[in-house]
Image (tube, rainbow, N blue to C red):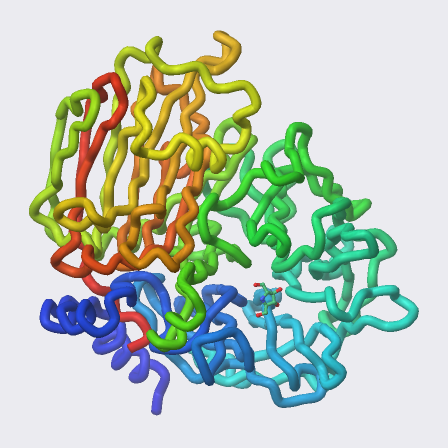
Length: 568
Ligand code: DQQ
């Protein structure tokens, strides 16, 4: 069948939004935790996003998938495509174990678009000796925009641990998107670990993408971080939110580089912003970036093994990240699936040059349906709770902004309170302090037997000249009557000055995921929750203030989100 005709059929039937109230009802009864607009396969286990790219106008997402069950194992590359990053069509797995170099699993990897527009993927194979090696695969038919069939290189594995190169065969994985160097040679980095827990990004170079030479020095390494998984290395503009191609030759001071590593020991995606010296092939993080537990993170909740790609059509850099379950494994087996992808986020460097900003891709706004709008409401001190009526609160998008008066009444932050998650856990949302907690209660039952609260507290900094410290929390401790799930209270600092700016929060609520963006994307926290009562139409949304000072809600917009067509 002709490709044009196929595309036509797909546009007609594939790329539409389903909004079936009856099916939502069935959804609520049988599978209350499946999502309406977050990416997930129809069943079984999913983890890392792999090889995201745009090819001939079609977005591709591959993902670590177990075709046989709801727990990790038998890993293949699941594959879906989309024209809008919202609605997705499922294809057969793109890459499955079939040769000695990947017979025990096709693990994480990335896509690179070669000059002339030809995509290739580099992925980690678990070989017949259970060593981690790197393999190449190319599309069989470049005229198929859906890239449904892939051929593995007869030269695989292209990179392997040997007695001479000193690479640990158990810790050598997750190749990045490759980039072209000043000498016209490709570069790629692979996550690894050396003795005594030094994490590193091993650098390889190649002229032809087949023959690779290991550089004597890694691109970067750090003591005590343990194995680096899923590294991601990309340029960002020093100003503005336009994305930059991974191989772009923009130079400092107009371009900075970001190195993200997934720290396995912490299950966190941490990043630094710094300078990439193209001649010496080293990356040096800017001063002030710490690499310990308080390193900056893409997300301060559940979000791991993330990967970006450059969307050349819209000139955006887009971030995908895996959001794991926080329920016991037996519950995952019972419901027959595990793992979501967060809503793809546009990502860019903030004006301070010190942090990345993330915002849900604008395409997701086309799912917004019925809207409720509020303006100028005063949330009185000590227990103001207002219900937002008129939307389906289990599948919603909410944007709200608060203005705190009487900032001088904020309590001073305790000395040593440098860990926001710890502050949020100690300063539980029911404890009243000067300014805050104020925020949202989402996925709440009518009488608040269950709810997930996302809220702020404002403290005075220890030095008057430093102004205020704004902490954002996402509290899962009362999310479900079932106490067997993870009940962590997550926390993040939000770098805003409440004297001049309203404190804004956007929360994407989708049955079992609560994805929150504080300070217009300066701090993100994603939670997974499994309410027993606050399900489907029995789910409610509230705004609250439990602090001892009143707070003004300047604006609130809440929308029902339509159900997207995802992998059905
Ligand atoms: N998941 C993959 C690995 C990667 C890990 C295996 C990160 O390649 O290091 O499924 O979640």
